[in-house]
Image (cartoon, rainbow, N blue to C red; front, side, top):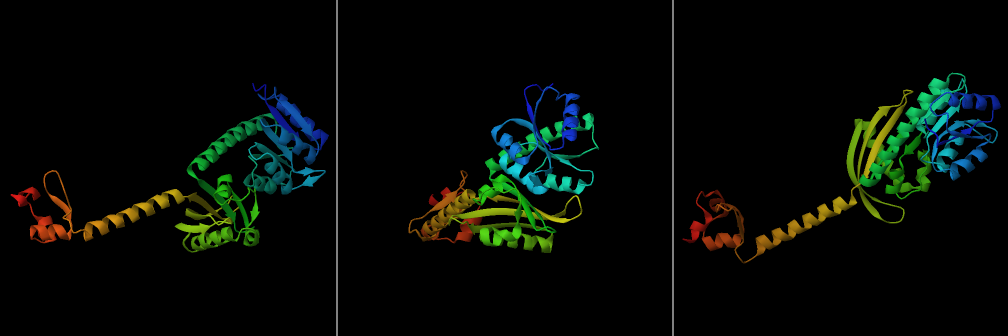
Length: 308
């Protein structure tokens, strides 16, 4: 039994709020403290103050807010919280959309009991833990992910995605807004999504200059897919590989320097195995041994015998 956790219930209908609390009392979460608020403003204050809420049960139709903006405000105030949306009987589509926008799950009022509520809470808690671990992994690997809904021209992305592009996190972004607010990101999507539209999948590396002038080298992969409601979406991941790219460029520069020194040196330079088989040599070595590169490299005779 969970006895030290708190559940925030944001619901303005007294009957619905009482029923939820009764159901909670019939589950393994009966020991939780239920903090009940009847408006979004009051709920936001609690969400910002309480850091370890087990769950937030959120009605999307409140006196001071209605619809998806209600969820967006809660997500912004408590981005790592386990949010379960409560919808009316005719709002199933709204519930599915809410899950895509940051809620862990949704429940339709009048269509669940204590058992369903308990199962939903357990699954949402575990899903939230998995997502947190995924986000931590993304931060370590510098990998961000995004989903672009073509029908609604709406973008949702992970926090690491926004960190990579040095932009403030937003739960939902209208893609056309980026043309003025972040043109470099708009151009990024134009290129990646354009390639994906033609081939169904795109894999590319590209250089990008961020708003502050910093230049980054990115690896991006995007695939065309379908959402739960059948709409077309692009699913993508992007990784900041700037450090790896810089290291590779430095290796290439060193290789070029080595080749210049190797080929232009007036001293004989060669590479051979312990057994004396030549692997590489420069022109000065050919001159010293009075033989061509092809003959020396193909010779079965140990190289050191040339000096005997």
